[in-house]
Image (cartoon, rainbow, N blue to C red; front, side, top):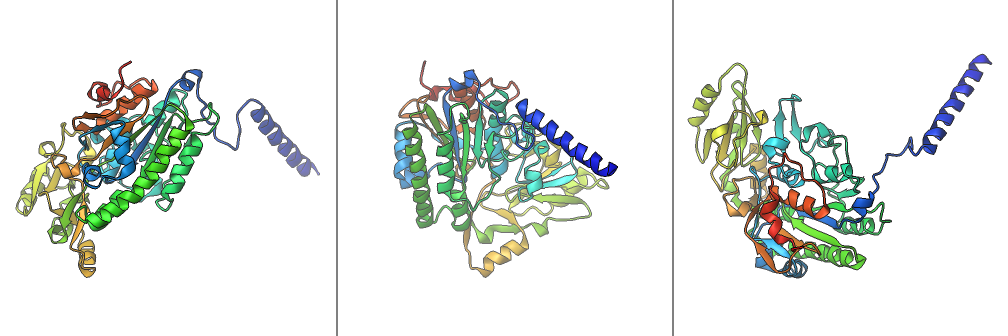
Length: 428
């Protein structure tokens, strides 16, 4: 009986503690949720929409109706210049932080982390959701720390506990979720009570990237079909946001563009590999070379230079494409860059394309000096001018622009500069 009485008393204690915690405002089984401060309630709304792989010239070429009208009544840049390498994860996270990949740490979709002793891969859910990989202060983290509710229906980094913080509302990435669902939930967020309503929202669509990779941007029929279907989804979003009557600004961007690649121009990465001398991390348009401890950078350079054929070998500090002196150790000490129009792949991947008689695909990752790598910047809403066109702009400058609209303090350690894009805003 003594043992039973002890168990009973222990259960009563747990219930009492749980009840006390709920009474004090902390729910044991539910995460705490940010609510808008009085200051945040007075701020407008920003919906940052990313259209992965949307090249700078698609709208002018195909004239999708909703995006065309959106731009006509808003602002646009001639193009959006990605950071190098022009890949999805580094550029989405640069847009989210205003910091170059070298500093925020997500230098590629796949890279070796010396700090952790592992290779980060976008397909590894544990790594994608590990906030310790991600540097900088993403927009949603800045908002949350400023007592402003944020939400994300997919955006690189939003699933991770960056600085121990998630958006108030967010989803783990699932590419099978239909665009209509993403738009519908975004509009539902805007219908929440004002103290729970997110002022900073991110939204992501992969359609143009998926289509561009599979069929190449030269396949006009496929590109136009995907573009017009996506445009319908965006039209639903634009009309739904307008119907709320809220002072909501929509910013539409992309992480990179897309170039056509003949599959005969793929270079087997196996021809480069030498496991005794170095490790290779393949990102298609750039190879990160990590010499083994038993060899030297000079020895590896000498070895690789003899193999140059439609690619060039560089010390990392001398590699073209970077707009800064790369300092992050995770790059490795040597980079291999294919000529534009060539791309590294595995023998298995190349053979698969040959078996399916695929003659061309779409790729990206190259130096942003090539305009095919450029993306888009469009914006519309009460904070923006109408019918305004800005010069081509680097994606690092979007972050301070959004901070300015939302009244958030701009971190001093970012690479972006508010003055670069401030001209797109209405004068007070």
